[in-house]
Image 1: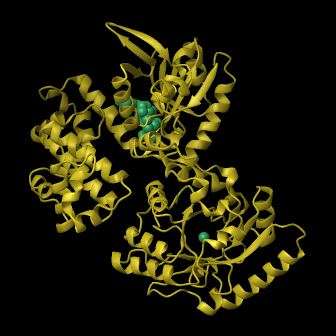
Image 2: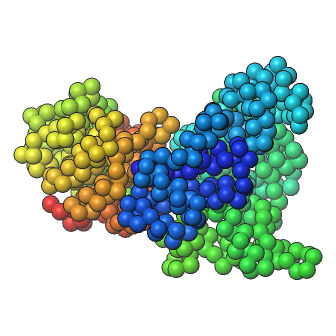
Length: 576
Ligand code: DGT
Ligand code: CA
Ligand code: CA
Ligand code: ZN
């Protein structure tokens, strides 16, 4: 059972307890525990199987949470959840997600009106039944209706890449407003999260009214949700939310820090400020002197951190995971940057399902500053993509030799293949063929729903094959679309480590596989990561930047990412 699943079960328990009106300290402890589990780079399953009492030594894991984790790992379920679900339908959890509707109100909706689902709640509000309940006014009913729409829309987080496009378009629009002195995007977008719930724009101006008027003229505006003196929220396109805040120059850095978050990172900062006799909020850092507060910083984000004795953390690591430890013990790692990438080792051509030829891909990669690429078309099992059999593959490699010989530069095209790991375990192409390649990627495209042991064995088996260099998109997840395979990543990391293999961070914005926590796990285990575009056309090469963001969130530096090295150096990391 992976950490994500354990964390989700603990969260579910906290939600259900909250609905029942249980002790709030207990609920908070479960929520904290769930977050610690989700962010941890150690496998909680492994800890429990070795010695459950070790759980108590982990920061943020109390006795209650430890017991639940142990039971979950050992018995496959948390009995308390089942007990609660005997009296409470699980759909009430959706209702709890409506902003401003606390567990007490949710419970009374359930007990008085039998409301179990968002649809039932919407119908009851529209029939004005809800306002007749004790504690519910007509106003509450309307705000619940609004909240249902928000709860439904809140489920629709967009890909970071789409948020990026939208942000650029908003930036262009706002640039023509003369009242704006500075503009920055904050929130999860700035932190580079793989999905973004809403965009947060921060503006430095003394004329909020003009800025907001300009904001509401955005061509793709769908609706103004709320507008205050300095704050405004709109919906754009088909309902995506954008929040605008206007602040003065003195507060711009503090507001940028505050609204970049994450929330947990900010909680930690506030605690540190307090220890130093300071107070930090979105207006600045203040020295508390008796009853008065003296402004000490706020115009620049760096200075805000500096006054707290901290470095200006790159936004991607502001998640209260490792950044404060790094700041204390050593220094913040020099996170990888796009221009450090020297080669792209995963791409397709017209030989299979790509749209460009070998030479076109090479020219495009060179134009983007790369020094080498690997052509890695699909193997024969992938019939829908016209996958290569041994004969066609050997032909392609001959062609690559000819192209390399013809070129008068030092750009290198490597002979590669993305070879399927067949459902039954073996590779889709014979070893005699694979051993002639410069670079062999192994992928799971079929049998993705196999049981944990089977699919794990297929992947670790591939890692044990001396002809394989790397596993592509190791978990198979597609963000918002498809769950990861049920694969034991701990076993995959171990097999990669033991066999000197690498793991891919597929930069496709829908994949971003490995995800950030897995990147951090690979980092700790010294397993080299390769960031790849998996391009199927020339513009597909440009997704590399999304992989870089994700790698940065995982705390990776150029040292951890093998394709920042020359091809010669990279090869020395492999066992071949
Ligand atoms: P999202 O929009 O769901 O992808 O995630 P964020 O992180 O952009 O969250 P959002 O838009 O609700 O708020 C932006 C930032 O503002 C957030 O990262 C931290 C800060 N913030 C918002 N609300 C609170 C709050 O209640 N407490 C604290 N400490 N910070 C908050
Ligand atoms: Ca946001
Ligand atoms: Ca927001
Ligand atoms: Zn591919």
